[in-house]
Image (tube, rainbow, N blue to C red; front, side, top):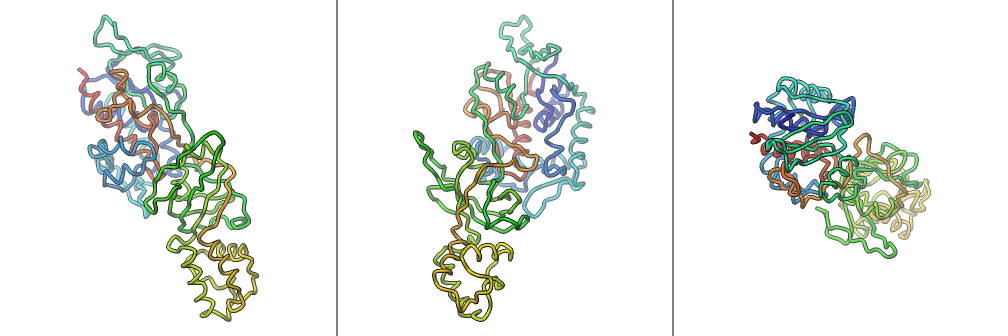
Length: 428
């Protein structure tokens, strides 16, 4: 018999349990984890350094980093956001640092620092940690003779009873099935945060090249189904999906923040496309094709005696420049003075409007994120309690919430777990 059972020994589960115990030391709390280890995602996050959160302290802008959950998280972020997360860890002697791209890591550069923090806190607060405990069902005890007992939690080897339950199992098909049985709607999960598989001579042989680019998804028709692409872009309002940022050329295609953002915002659309689609890349986002052509015509006059291949007149990696020059039909020994307008137009097109065919996806490092989960309309976002079943709370990726890369998915976990904890801690 427990006052609170937290199902799932991940980021949100530990964060929630710790806050519940601190807010109400009288409660008997346990974390049930199905595996032998806890905090697995924390361990691998950020290449083993743990990308704890992101240095975005404006709740409104913070909420805009969530393709699913932006509207629902706005209120919660005004209550609990990055600033509070930093305070939580600093209070426990863990300093966080901000990197150039805004990601925040422990100064130790080790995810073990965060794991040890959580394990130490649960031990000090008297929270039971029960591993190898697979939950198979949740039974609300509406007619219980003991009015304090609200839940029966059935596992593969034991039955637990509890007043409140907090579910933090992440993207768990088993738990989604249990929640569906309780009356919740589950939005089918699809992958988010993935890289693009592309075979194209323009990017072959130059893995590791990185540059700032704008990437646009080109919509396509699917017989019998009309797909509307959401207007989600800070750059432009078009009939398509656009993302801008660093783009990394890899052995298998393209990655980097620009691609990952596009994969997150377009997760459901790209799933409908069966991960076969076209993108348009502008390697020089500050230019349009006509404006760049005019600039190249000026370069033709100024650098007349030099070869185009060896004269990179633009802010673009040299190896990529060489590939795009060749793709424009320009020979390596051709001088600027001798190049035709037609070939310069081709070069301007390759630099600002290059189309690539994507044939599949790859998981981004170890960070497997899904779009899908419990429908958000069924959650009270002031408390993260179910609107369907009283006394049932949820936080983290169990909900249909996901973010772009950079520490935002963890911030969702911290915020949801804290607000759930505030409500649960009022249990008598």
